[in-house]
Length: 202
Image (cartoon, one colour):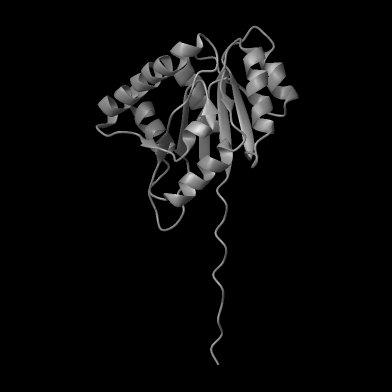
């Protein structure tokens, strides 16, 4: 009689959320409260303090986030600092003034699990302040600029995660795969980008 073994269950992808911030304590507090209400909590939340003079770092620490200080000015430098600190399979990126819906982390985890060869997801958002009639066209113009920049840089259109629009409101969002699950053997997309940037700076 042959012994039949059931396949081992696949490991759930681990998730970090990286939030760069500078002098935006009130908005950061709202963002972190929204993350605390996720249907599936992230494995770690990393707030990168980019030289704040307000209570942003303390708000992050009080919420249980890992606080990282980045002295180099600017959102790109602060984001990169957070990506370097992340220890998970996936990194989700939020601005401090983003308000993620309660299913956002789980939606992104499922999107990466369903598309094992996809390295980066981006998607839509909607503004929640300003004149109501202008929110949709302003969001389209704001996010369209990111798409055009991405197409110009990579020669291809960024991948959109399914139902992303129901998951996040206001701000810049993206998601990077930091480790690959079999059968993929490609290196981390962020590690590859970081190595190129480091080499070009020397």
